[in-house]
Length: 309
Picture 1 (tube, rainbow, N blue to C red):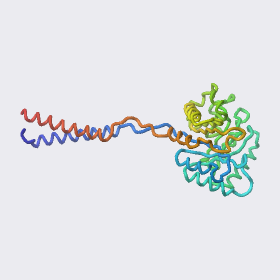
Picture 2: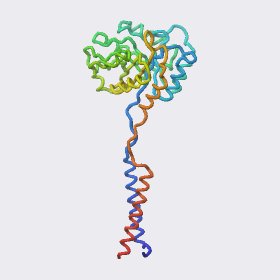
Picture 3: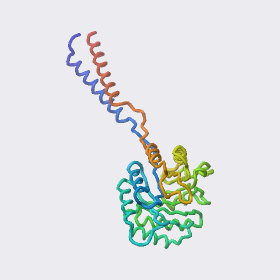
Picture 4: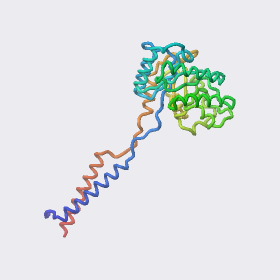
């Protein structure tokens, strides 16, 4: 075989250029890892922050998964100065990436608006920027109470608009309202609160909420014995459209007085659900090998063609 001439070098250079450009084009159009919105833990943290009782575990979990704690000193705020144990616990939680919403009981819309606003003011005077929003418990949503909850939502969002408003009707019934009306009174709705036994029949024919983002809805399930049952209920809640979850083996009268015995497994399960779902894609080594193989093939082809001239 005679040495390659200048024209041959030009042809090979052009081939190399074409192969490199083609490979870059392929790589820039490769699909990237993708996943659905993160599942978040919404934890009723109705326990005092002493050593080993759960707040430190919440902070550890918040470094792994999105987590919001519901702060509830006494079915609402306590009078007086801020409790430094709560200040430290909430600070540690938020430094780890978590957030805190303060508990208020609305008594099915019968607690006067002025009373609720007063409790909000007490929380903010005591804990200030450690409060990221409010959890409105005892929520009954119907045509009669709609205006009441809309007024509370507007008031909270004026404090500022970045606050989360989480309502707990405990069930998804529209009670004669349109979904848009229902959704106008909070950012997030806890549309199931009950035992694992009752969750087995949820949502009882109610599925309107599945047409809306899962980030608007939460499920809270207690009396769920064992981590295997927890995992089953977690997957069911996510499949039914809950973006926020909390599952515990604690039981009535206060299922929120401590974290579940399988807390670490629950955190790990949520983290696994949030892991990126990679799609198959050629590796960089494979692409480089393809380019080199193409160059060698082109060189041999050009060389073979040259020897026949």
